[in-house]
Image 1 (spheres, one colour):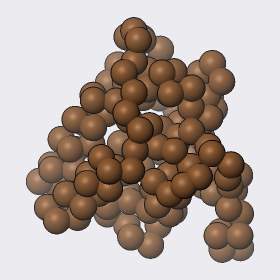
Image 2 (cartoon, rainbow, N blue to C red):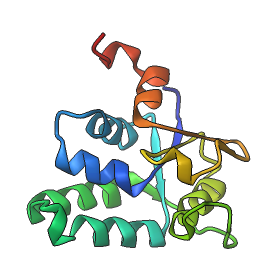
Image 3 (tube, one colour):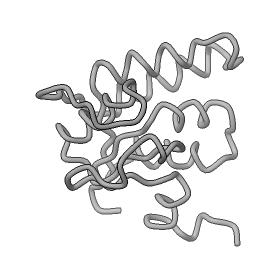
Length: 141
């Protein structure tokens, strides 16, 4: 996993909080560990914080804070240059904007149907696909 540039959709971060043994948690940990580089923008950080605090998700406050602290301390901030309107869900454009500004290799999401398969040089993949590409030995067969 040589210096991969990554952007994580909120659903991956939420799944990492809800399922400590799941693939999204593994993806999250790989994303914040060198040589990978997790990229975020201010709108993405705000969305992570908002969604992790939603009472209906029942994510313990300490877990949400811990994930946000890890993201803030181990990610690389970018400022998207211009707004995009490319996704099915307009709220998801912030992830393509970040991927564009970061020149990300991968945008990892559990909702591929909301995104184009590729955005410029960024490939949109699921957590399972990311693990298959970067660490296939972690998958149970």
